[in-house]
Image (cartoon, rainbow, N blue to C red):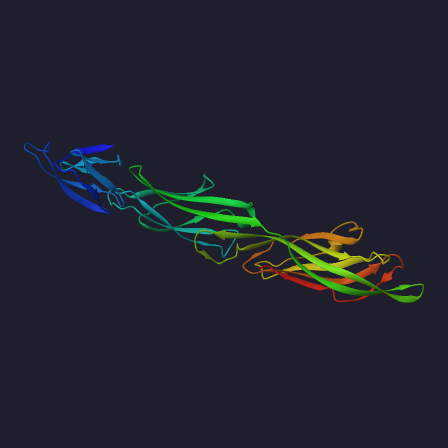
Length: 305
């Protein structure tokens, strides 16, 4: 707390700059003193004293100079490359005598980066890779400090959550041979794609952190007394930055089959604004005969909302 004795008892709110007060203790017989205040400082004059909470003061020409606090503002996040998301910020020193020297980025209260200051202006800071961000709400803080040790701050937040699987379902009719006769089996084909979504408290450019495709599962529901076929299918992503694919033949071993055969295979891992997962059955094999089955349908697509 720093105070100057004055003769008035009023409240003064100054957005930026200075004001003049009469200080009877300044000089031999009292004189006008110019008080500089920081952006947004509320100053109260009471009981003959003017006080401020800002302790960053120095003597300048007989008056008290209170350096303006640096200002920081988050402009936007750019996820055009979700492996290197960029946070853009703007900083202003507010006082040319006290330039900004340090600009630092904190993620969940942990310092993860900084850039050297070359003066007032815009700066880019590197955020964590989107695929490495876990579920939850993550605090973002930017600090801009001057060479006197006074800092300004800007705050934001990132949110990432795993959602309920996006699913698509269809009926499949499959024909198989038994005792030299063709028989019909009805199956329910289901495709489930797990994914997470990410949003930001600030404007996002690129939008490629919006959806992160994860594991998927392909299944067919069995009717009683129908064969439990081996299912051969390909699962692929569409609309991501790097579309990938996987097949049930890559799962290893046989599926779990009771009233349903479930193939858990494939981690697409794609990132994008509006991606989709596609499942295409290209073969049903009856191990009881053994022989390939004839079927209709077998293609499912889930678009992430």
